[in-house]
Image 1 (spheres, rainbow, N blue to C red):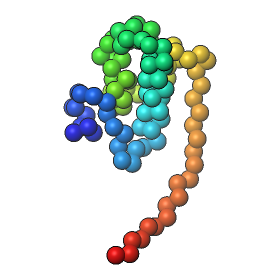
Image 2 (image 1 turned 120 degrees about the vertical axis):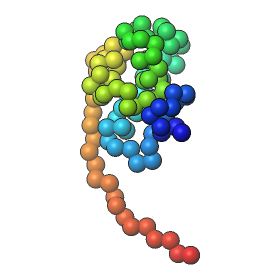
Image 3 (image 1 turned 180 degrees about the horizontal axis):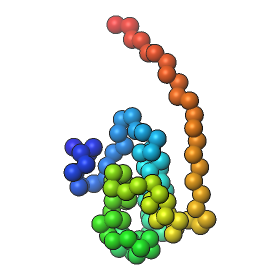
Image 4 (image 1 turned 120 degrees about the horizontal axis):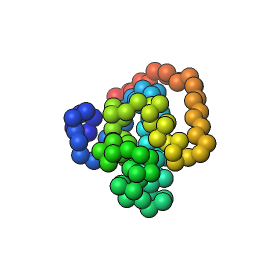
Length: 102
């Protein structure tokens, strides 16, 4: 239910094996959520600050990753954090084979 793109309630969970793009958008959303909470802003106040509708703002606050693209998300966060900086870390994933003895 939570991973269904039509699900409108609550925050969306990150998929079990998220793509790097999903992970990046999720981490930015988490920073935005912390900013809102730390500054004790209502959703309406926060929407005005980043110049979005309340519905678009809720997409970010509820981590609805399929509802926006990374560059738009960066534009919104640049209104909160100055200067905006994005870092991309590429690392090789250890693909060890796991075995279980029964």
